[in-house]
Length: 122
Image (cartoon, rainbow, N blue to C red; front, side, top):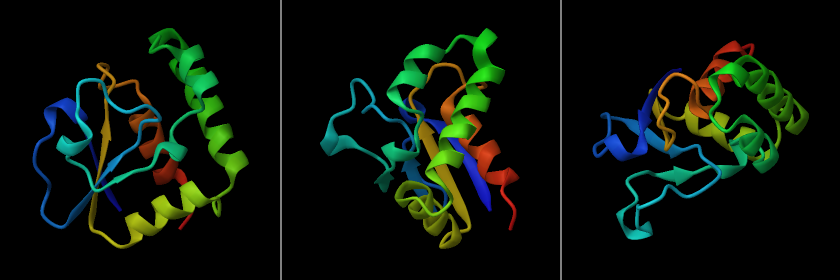
């Protein structure tokens, strides 16, 4: 599984044979729905609103954010609709592009989601 991360505002093309997935819970500011440049929006795999607001992109909370986010994903289970749909999309492509709106390219939910998926067995 090859997962590439791109900030949604900086991404205007697709990798050949890839699926582009918006992995944010909230629609990115300033992007009209008609101008959306992704194939699917999986807001259900994003952190809960409560966790997202608690984190507020504070790098000092990054490790705890990942733990809480992974716990949310684990609680939903690998067969949950959102995680299941994501795994199905990933199985059907060579490359997935996770799109996110956060300014911080190193500490955001897409980075955490990629790490979570890469740590899953099989």
